[in-house]
Structures are given as C-alpha cells and as structure tokens.
Amino acid sequence: MERLVGTVVRGLRSPIFKAGDDLTQLVPDILDKFYTNETIEIGEKDVVAITESVVARAQGNYVTIDQVASDINKNFKGQEVGVIFPILSRNRFATILRAIAKSDIKKVILQLSFPSDEVGNHLISVEQMDEAGLDPYKDTLTEKQYRDLFGIQKHEFTGIDYVSYYKEIVESFDKECEIIFSNSPLTILEHTQYVINCDIHTRKRTKALLLKNGAKCVCSLDNLMNESIDGSGYNADYGLLGSNKSTEDTIKLFPRECNELVLAIQSKVKKRTGKTIEVMVYGDGAFKDPVGKIWELADPVVSPGYTKGLEGTPNELKLKYLADNDFKDLEGEELKEAIKNAINSKEDNLVGQMATQGTTPRQLTDLLGSLCDLTSGSGDKGTPIVYIQGYFDNYIN
Image (cartoon, rainbow, N blue to C red; front, side):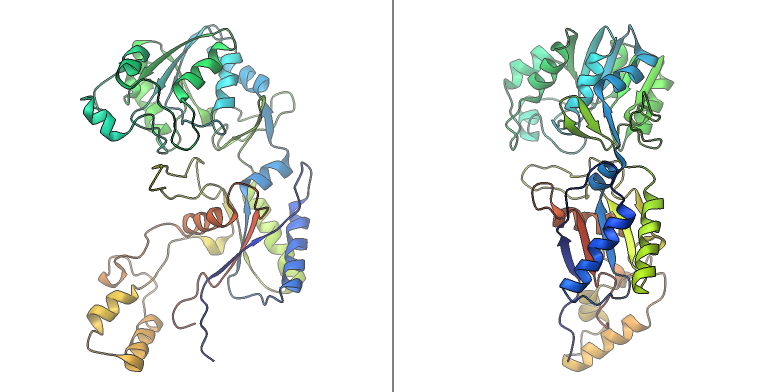
C-alpha cells in the first residue's frame, strides 16, 4: 500500500523537571515508554528535541538579581547608565531591569526603540508614527513628547503600558529613570558614556558603534553573568541573553553545555535500541505573528545544541515548479514517475538552481526548532519533549 503520511510531530508529556535531574537518563526513559506505548518503529533520522527551559532547569542554571547587580557593579558602580534597546517583556527583560536598578548605579537612562522593539512588540503602530510625522531613522523623543503625541499605549495582548511599567521598576529601587525614544544607538552618548545594550541579534554592531564613537564602557547582555558569582548559574557564551523570569528576584539563564547533552542522549538511545536518532535542544522559533507583529525569536539562537545529522540547510526540489515547468505536458502516473526520477537524480547541492525557488532557505535547526516551539507551546501543554518522524523524507520515500 502506498504511504499516505509524511512528517509526523508528537509532543511527549513529561514529568516536571527539577534542578539536578539527569536528562541523559530521563529523556531515554521517556522515549522507551513512548516507543512501547505507542508501538513506534524508529525511523531513519527521527528527531527528539528538548526545550531549552527543561535543560536549564535541570542544570539549575539560575541567578538572583543580587548576583546580577554584583556583576553590573564591576563596570558601572556610581555611574549614570544608559540601558538601550530592551525588548518589551515582563518575562524576558523586567527582572533584568530590576537587577540593573538594584545595582549601585546613580541613574538609568532608558532608551526605547520605536515604533517597536527588536522582536516586534509595538509601543505604537506604524500608522501612528506616520501620522505624527516621525522619521524613525532620525527623530528622538523625550518621555513628555511621547506622551503628548500618543498618551497611554497598552500592548495589544498583555495590556501593559511598558513605558510606565519599566519606569516604575527602576523607581521602586529609588533610582531616577529618564526615558528617551530613538533608534540610533549613538543617541545615548548625548546622555552618558556608560551603556548596557540589551538588543539581541544586533548587539555586536550596536556595541561596536558605541565604542567607536567614544563610549567609555559598553556591556551587552551576553557580557553579564558569564561566570558564576557566589555559586550562581552562568552562561559563558550568552550571559543574560535568552534568559526568562523565574520569580520576581530570580532569572533562569539559557542552558549551557548543550552539545555534550545531545550527544550523550543520542549515545544512550543507540545503546538501548540499536538505532541512531538525531537530538537537539530548542528555544524560541523564528516566525512572525500577523496580528501582534511579534517575531518570536527572543533567544540568541533557535538551537544551542544539536547532533551532527542536523547540520546544514534543506536540499529540496520544488514539486510545483517541476509540475508547472519541466513536466507541464505530463499527467497522472507519468507525471508522478517523472517527478520521482527527478528527486532520485537530484544533486547533493542544489543552490542556485531554478527548481529550488520557493523552498525555505533556512538552517535545518531553525526550521525544526520553530516546528517544535509551535508544537510544545509555552503554557500548560506539558510536552517539553518533541518527537519528529519523516521530516527528512521526500515524495519517493
């Protein structure tokens, strides 16, 4: 019988993981139950993916705002500090801002980008910006000018006025908070030479521009909490990037040593089953919400660790291109066989060929991570482990 099902994605219900849990044992145990209960036959290049949150929790990779404040004091104690380009998020940034405000700095000059932050959370709509006659490439606003133009603006989904929310966080630690709005990193140098730049994917350029133009000290979020402080967690590569709020005073960091973890899980599954599966750790996917305009990707990377079989990009032919062009005069079984033959004989590297146009030009781990993020969700589904079969199959399998 001809196979009708291609890719199958399953979210696996799992226990609530805690600090100290051994994922190299627990994940293979969960897979054993899954294979047995669902009578699953392990296929060629099956993928198991574990959310970064589970990995970080098992590692106990947490820091307190006091520990972060201590790290900030190394470079910024007694200074008026510019905090620029944070994303608008209670989960991702508010607790970091609490740590900054709790440190021994004099004042926070908070610079927000407009009309939205880096990942698409809007302070104002593009239409509001245009109606106000603002040029996002040149204009700078004070808080008063922003309020005179736009009043109170609440986020469409969270209902939070982030301008007030962030200011109240800083002032709750008896620190002055001045807010400005500008998309140029150089604007902050009109106020201070000491800067913490909080952007994610543009952080290297922002830091380089600030230092080139006279900043005395610049730290990106990935420069903070690179080492343990008083027994805290840490991340040598990403620091505070990719972190999440745990409590009002505690932050869960992005996981570390992920490549070691995925290789260990792959090895243990191979010993138990005789089969080689691919393993990855995933964070935020990379996709845009058409209503809220949010780009999901608030982590520094989609996957901080994956096995070798997940390297690279798709090498696929566009079936509709073949049907509409190369084989436009064929129908039925003859068309089907022609397409199968084209797939069978395709080159190992199809970059630049017209028959690939319209295929997704992204890394496999970014595609798979986005698929997993949508499957597991971020709420109460209880499926932080995702199992994927048939992703690398094509029309002839």
